[in-house]
Length: 243
Image (cartoon, rainbow, N blue to C red; front, side):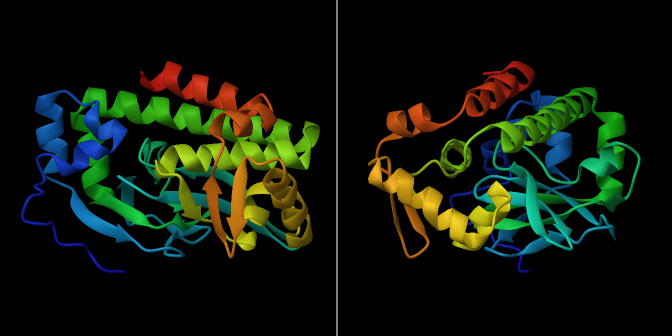
């Protein structure tokens, strides 16, 4: 996995601010935290952590999307996603050095990473940095808890709409790549069911789905199809992290 070289017009002073946690830091803490960051590419399918592996770095995406997946005997289920609004490496904040789930890049993008030892030191020395990390961690826990209820109570179509809205928010563009495999992780179903759900949304005229590429053609319509869980999760994040 290669470290991306900054362009001539991009500097370490402004590029990390594309991550919402880093952007929210007061200037004094931002300067200290930035000194320990390095730019890091996130090609699709890149594995950041294997389950039960030691955490060598934490990651602050500025684009793209990271998926955390529980792999079980009967298949894999996504338990959470992280984009430019957050960071990956939660156990390190809570005193553990192992990642319980597999974390890999679902949508390609860019990030900044920090060595585990530097991260622990930065948390101890920068109280606002620590506060934001803890609050995002709570938002991520709430996202996972909402997903459990969602998977139990809501229809496949509405759950699919919810996950597409969350991915659309993170990608910040009309279309993005999303394979049947990724959608099956997100929804906790086998691939044939993904075809059914995506087909229903396409016939409703809210998305266009061809060869693993999804275009959101009616955002308001997709929100109308989604269950309440999308809005609950979104409002909870904004309450915890600021508008």
